[in-house]
Amino acid sequence: MFERYSKNVLAEYLRSFVFGVEDSLASTVGLLSGIAIAGVARETILLTGVILILVEAFSMAMGDFLSEYSSESYIRQAEVPSRRSFIAALIMFFSYLLAGLIPLFPYFILTPEFAVWLSIGLSLLALFSLGIVGAKISNINALRSGFRMFLVGGAAIFVGIFVGIFFSNR
Image 1 (tube, rainbow, N blue to C red):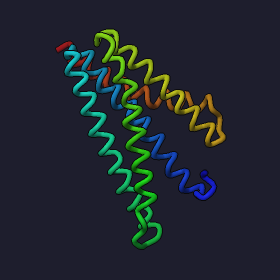
Image 2: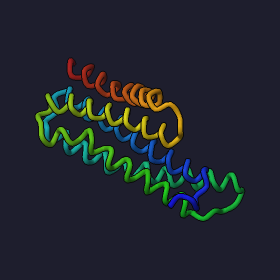
Image 3: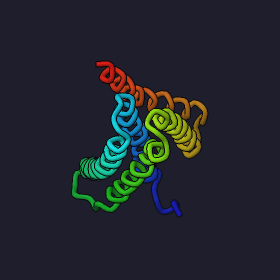
Image 4: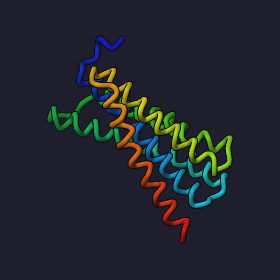
């Protein structure tokens, strides 16, 4: 199926997928954890999560489309067809949207006090798995890539947790 695509195009699509999943996991769980730790009501957490995921999935897709299109136009120094950029934007949209459901899901079934920890755990596991999948596709060290994704994405998650703790004690 992918034989007709060049390695550069596949790399562009992989970048959109990894960026969408990582950003969605880190920003969604960071925000949800921060507001859950601050003691916000479950309904507010769910509403905030759904709004964040939908708005950011669309925004990230549009940003991906515009940046890919601009980059390709710059490289070619001419107008370019937008099909590739559109496909990358769709990949970004759906990867962000679906990955955002991972940290949000626990809040549908558990109280915020328990959901926050499951949300963080599932998101860190998903980040580690994303690193492994990306490494397998790229034929590089899977364990190292998994831990890199875990640590970098985890750092962003803990910014949200720290801010929630900081402001909940005020």
